[in-house]
Image (cartoon, rainbow, N blue to C red; front, side, top):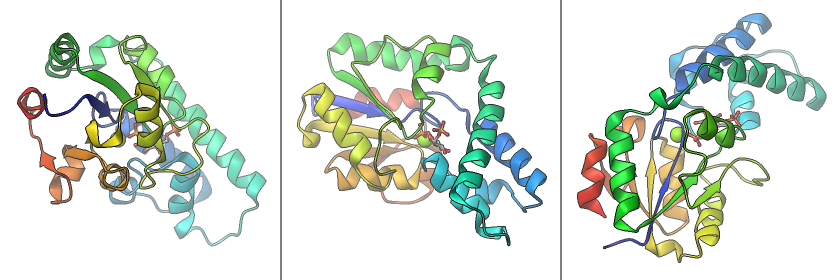
Amino acid sequence: MKYKAIIFDLDGVICHTDKYHYLAWKQVADRLGIYFDEEINNRLRGVSRMESLEIVLERCEKILSHEEKLSIADEKNEIYKNLLKDMSPADVSKEVMDTLTSLKNSGILLGIGSSSKNAKLILSKIGLQEFFDAISDGIGLAHSKPNPEVFVKCAQMLNIDPTDCLVIEDAIVGVQAAKAAKMDSVAVGDAAKQDIATYKMECFTELIALV
Ligand code: B16
Ligand code: MG
């Protein structure tokens, strides 16, 4: 096999809660009278909650204190978590589940590298909290993607050299983070619209031939 480990981004790769991030930010932006649309939401992919808030606030004329910003971020997170409440294993497609199972059976190590502080909550809802060999999430992360920290931490947890890892990402900042970590990457979804990753993938099952 070409790689010893695969590190998956969570949102936009294993499951799709991007629509919930959009709805939650939209509700908060509307309350604050700030313009927000799907194009702005696309810039939030892979970006931490507080950095996402700064992007949302680019169109806010008022200067907010750090405490006010924390409170808005909490408000958004409560709305988002409420939208996650009905998630279940049915939110993982058969194609993704079959591919993950086949890779696991091949003996390659599987990790998660997500910017989300809710990653473990989401994984438990979709029934995959015990599936991965390592989960590197947004909790305790000093730098958000495109910084390589989240992927470097995952490689350390797996006890694997970064150059032996392959990252699967839907965010452009995520592909940049993989590159900065000296890892090859596969772009899906939004990230696949640009030629920045090592590979592009339209269908998840293509991954089996890549590793
Ligand atoms: P939270 P990923 C990222 O997850 C999302 O793509 C991004 O939109 C979100 O702002 C970020 O998590 C932080 O999420 O507010 O739950 O901590 O794609 O890196 O799995
Ligand atoms: Mg993502």
